[in-house]
Length: 108
Image (cartoon, rainbow, N blue to C red):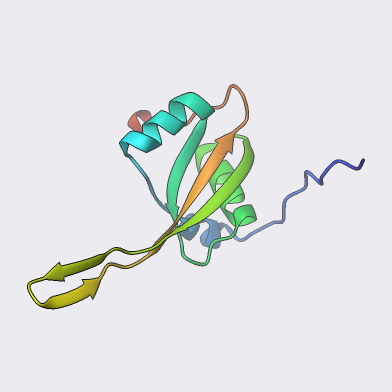
């Protein structure tokens, strides 16, 4: 069986800097980070898995094993008789290779 290609496409640095929007800091996010060595990011709506991988490797100088992406649907909210909807967004679960770590407290 052939191993998957380890070469990544070369993306422009300007594009990679706009792919990652923010880390998702939540109870579930910290649990996943501790248990599975993954980090959750809010990403651009048109971001792809290879772009997210390249962006994390460029910005944080770590090795990424895999990326899973999920679309989060916006909630329907009411205020009195007015009904509105929050905007949907995209998040990426980035699995780091063993021994790799991203510490957001030291980055700033």
